[in-house]
Image (cartoon, rainbow, N blue to C red):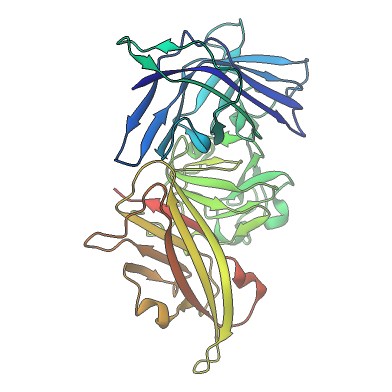
Length: 404
């Protein structure tokens, strides 16, 4: 069935750019939206929109900025159980470029990378009954929601852009400027490297993306990214391919990874993230696979006198089903290993057990335990550490990978 969205509005108050408003610009230019049956109990809806975005205090000043999307916006939710939506989360299908309203069509100044938005049918007065292209009645949907908008990445050279990323030189975590996501050429934050030669750092300001590290001399050779420092207040991400594609590796706010060789990656030529990252986003990233963790407790192993930490890991798919997957974390201290009480009963594959500093689990070799939209996959995991430490309560760079 095809429907038309006839009212859409989003407002947000931010600390950096003031008020942001998105309003549907013309409901006659966008294609009719889709309403499809996925199963007997599940619906998929894809609203298509054209809108105007108003930014009260844009970076660089100059007063209120009015932007228009350059291509039709497509939102999607493929696990609805009721239509019209009632508090259901939709995701942006692909990034959307924006130009100044009324300006040259090719003058892209901002890109909306992600837009997780909750939609609810409004209680506004009902609009006139509408007809579908085949002449039968069609639902008319109005949507309005209050939402923060943290995913607007500007391409203006004087604000947030790829051009603001800077190649600097230095050693140690303290070489990373505050408010930046720093990528180091060597492990252990370049310590011991030749100054001005082997101690390259790519410093990426918060809110900025870099599409290809090779432009800065970081590639898949031995001269790639080997350690990272996130000196910002936002969770950032690395990607194994250019243009924020491939596998993604989260790097928590105000955290660091001294050796990416201690973070396993499926399908990597060297088995890890060392020298493999090719692009980055200094902002939160939400892909199809979402992973959450909770430390459930700890106790001492009477036999080894080491410490067992127990975690519940929750994995879910936001949009599409995942049949083959891998789950990893790393940067573990020497002497750490998956506890045998877990490995003896785990139904999937253990590709790396922690002895090399990283853990990599995978879906069963013969299939099963898929990750489906609307259904959480729970994994209770135990890790044996050489000592008791509060730092062990959080797994470093926990990530899920969709395998081909």
